[in-house]
Length: 355
Image (cartoon, rainbow, N blue to C red; front, side):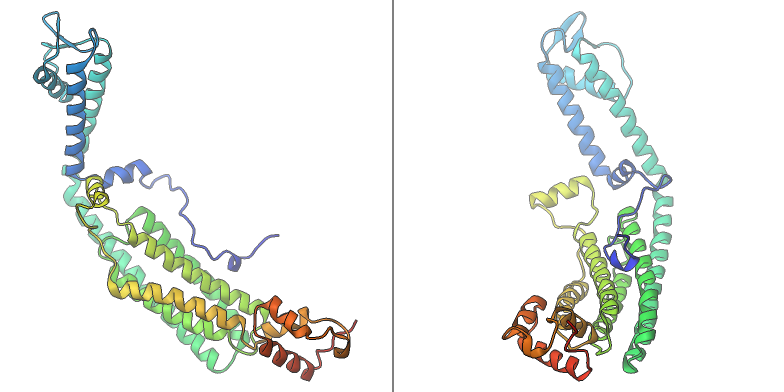
């Protein structure tokens, strides 16, 4: 069965962008000068040890005789790594493969360093401009959410179910756009790591207040099953967005050697989630759980419809003894609430149901 947009509240992963940096490009962008220096050192040490300990015919030779000196092997590795190749030492057998690998890695490392040095200033300027644009967009999202919350509060005060139903459609599109923006920039441009924490905090504050209003709408007596389901889908989308922000900031993008030091316990992450933001994120999720549980047991039109569908047909005198307990168990609410709902349905003339 085909589902609507409100049935897919989860935040998505950005699809492939052919002109955006690839996964390899983003990995290289993370690399710091310390990472490059460490990688070069590991390659040179590894090749030097291998060439010094290589079996006969698979190392390096000097004047026709294979040498096992670690200093000669280190000298050959450095000269080959820089692609100079004086020719005084000659690789043999598997040593030729090692020499080819040294040349390729050395050329790549030099090209990477030159490019990184040449573009460092322009890249920093562009990143500052991009961070400012992201900050502006996030604050704009916060303003839009605040406006929607004000409209919803007005409609709640007047119990305008029809207008709330229309606003739900608008909110679905707005939140989907915000989720796609945050997901894309969280994956591709390190949204949670540099300079955007205040704007994210403001947006999360507005999302929390909007969620409270939506949960209040779910408690209106005239809220039917369809509207409650749509409101619940919006709440779940907000929770999905908040969880993504938490995950995005819980795994800060740092250079490879820095990540290794953090993992080994020698360093702390360079990016920490602000305490105020952490309280909002965790508080919003706990509020949602309480609100959804309360809405499921509120005496609304949605609950009345569920009770009506679950009750037995025929006159009440023909119902099994204590049948309201069965209904309460199936719907997961209290016996008292079911009894009140049955009384209200009888007052409305909707019970008993015809056989």
